[in-house]
Length: 300
Image (cartoon, rainbow, N blue to C red; front, side, top):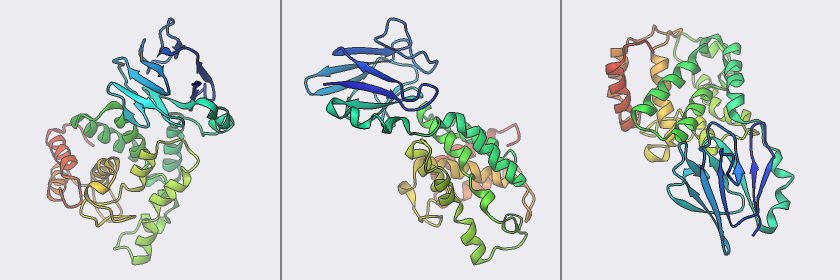
């Protein structure tokens, strides 16, 4: 069976590796069958084996992990045509058998690697709306602290930070009279506010962001008790990324001056998070945030 790996992003996007042997070692070492010179890739990262009709990937105790369709390969996993195989942060399309050529044109059409486009997208948000200046950076920093406190896997952490940085991508589309309102919003104004998650998804529709990131962005205003938007999801139906970003964003928002109130102090924020744990916020994430806020020395 013909096995081809195709770079999905970055400067080598579209480059292909044809595996000609039944056993191939992938890594950054010069003696690997497929050499991938990246700091994210271990010297001998993973092994791909052809056995009859099956193609199997084995992780070789790599530092940054081998992932198949977003899930870490603990020992080994069977590859199928169209799968995404990632070595650390380096994603490849898996092309197998006679179906390799039918995807030759499609594989090069993805947008630029999101690692390179995130800074420009965040800059766009802050340039168009001063109210959010530095907002994404603070949410990302707090999200990373929460991820570290909860022992989040590095790959999941990367997706988490990406979603946190773009959570308010579409807020500049919200009219300024709503963003700077000093009184309770009307029903129509709330409707405008609630459109920004779907607007963000529309902006990102041609990107190569992992689906978990896009879902995390769309649902970061859902609430644990089902009172949020856009879909009124609750508990475990809310994407895990959204549950973490919701807490981080709420803390940063409470710590910021708003037209209708002054910023809260850390102890007030801690009490708010603790009070709404299991109601608005995932209790596990809220508990990690409360612990973090209790030990917080630097300003958020």
